Image (cartoon, rainbow, N blue to C red):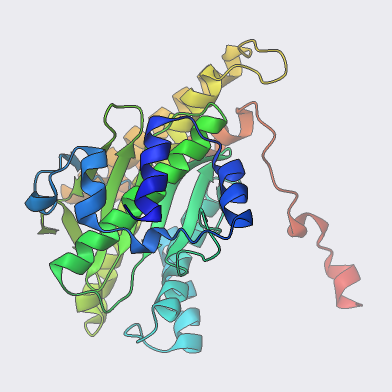
Length: 351
């Protein structure tokens, strides 16, 4: 058994503090690297048959939560700025591609005003990192809820793609164990960026055995799950922008749903100082506004499909007001002290 699989087996059977375990194996010079995990070995830990090549995985429906067109415009403008630095979006380097696509996540995460934050440090369980493949770990109030994985853009074979899924399963498991150490139980969504586009997955560590499912979107290339095509459209800019909006709004739906779920989890989590539940009134109101926002953003997409853009825009504007209200009243201390709070035209003109 490889060191990586030994770690996975131990953590699936026992409650292990990931940070403490990391420290122990690092001190002993052990080399545990989830990028070496193979699908044939890890599939049984999420109740999948390695021979079925993920075709036996359960599916969940991907949905689009519409965002205001001005927000999408800022994403495109930021990507243009990145392409001025790194060149057109057909890079040989996955790092350059990742940085060019970063505005998608930068702008969407900013909607949540620090309730969702990006911790780019991967879960490291040995002397070596996972080769920089995990690009983002998004935390909602500190709970790891979404992973973005940037695999090598030269991945083309089914075996390579399955092994990328295997690494995601292992990383999701490690993130789940980290959450459990803080008495937090949330499903973890994972997004894989490969040579075609983006695929979406979900890890549930509260089932026995763990479950790992694939996201399905109508019209996506299917391998039991859907791949939202993006890169094949890079030489057709209008088509690319249309695909980019689909992708962006699916990502936003994942983030908004994770925010809604985390509100419920943190409402129900006992106060770590008193062991008692918190005052629930503010939590209930914050949850109601967040749930309303998610429903309206999804319904706005249906209005768009019905060729009612004005109605869709009005619904989205109301939904974003609900998000802002929810963030304003949620009873947690998470707000960032922004630099722009200290901006002074008069002072800085003279600096």
